[in-house]
Length: 89
Image (cartoon, rainbow, N blue to C red; front, side):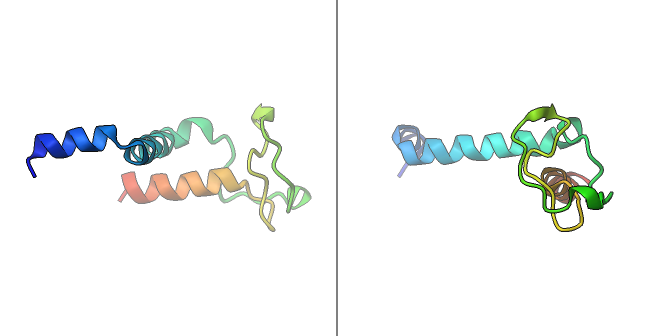
């Protein structure tokens, strides 16, 4: 199969396009992690422990995905790990 035919076949495949754009969005979010993560990933706030997701009720200032058992922001933890692993090593 020629590369042109392969690219044409991938562009026509809905499953490929959904997966491709999903990976692109995740990549962009990982690159921009320091911009939208307002909480420090290592700071604990025991008053917020196990808090449920706030879903942008306080904008990006709230805990969008909630907090873990030690009161750390889950979104910031995940974004920081991916950003550090991919771009700082």
